[in-house]
Length: 364
Image 1 (tube, one colour):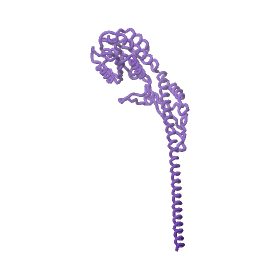
Image 2: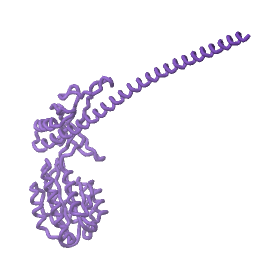
Image 3: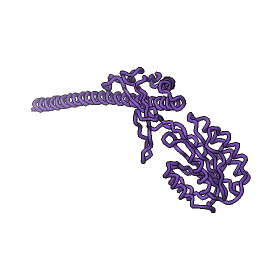
Image 4: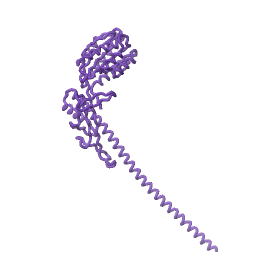
């Protein structure tokens, strides 16, 4: 009896041991399968991560190359347009554009342009302020350049670092830029009323000096005239390319009297009436004051008349007592910008900024 019970207990222990062994084997098999699955998942994620890194690197490379191509194409268009404005020779404009393009690196290589990458025509400003380029239309004032890093371009396509991973090996950007040179006749209308006496007039002279020197650095030879006003106005310098005469004449003026902005604008309009043909030249008037209009007709009426004659008007107010509201409205009527200067430095900056807008501009 006791022997039988011992055998039974042994059998039960053996069965329990076998079950535990089976369970342990099953758990080990499951753990092995889980580890295998995790390894597969990690491998898939690693491949995805590498692909994402490769994609990011090439995307950044593509953005950089496109930015370099944009800069090089802009520079070539500006150089060609400047050369055309100086010489009116298409071949020389193309040569200059090619020369400047080759000085700019795109993906570590010079940008090489063909003659066929240059187009010549005319750009004109639409009502929305955008320029529209028309190829072949004369008189020419615009050069459009197409910068290419394509397979059929002289510089070739741009290779990618991880092209095989992404499924394509090269990047072929194409950028167009149009630069327009704008011939302008400019009339400066300055305030010589009594409130300008002393340091203010000296600061105005210095600012006009910077304006003139800035124009001398632009590729286009603007013609500039000078009118001045107090309660009366005078035509001090007719339109001229001898810009030093503007500074010399301004230095001889003596501030006194009241303020008639409108009479100053009328004197400026009289000078402008003898400007070159509007078919070839844009006309700009820059009206400056440090005070309040208190004599003569309403300046806004003069501005409307000038605007109807295609004269762009910029205005500058100098000092805390200047009539900013009226002058800002005059600029709006004339399609120009208004600048307010509280210091000599700000006055100089205003004239410099206007001068820089009078030259060649990238219009596309």
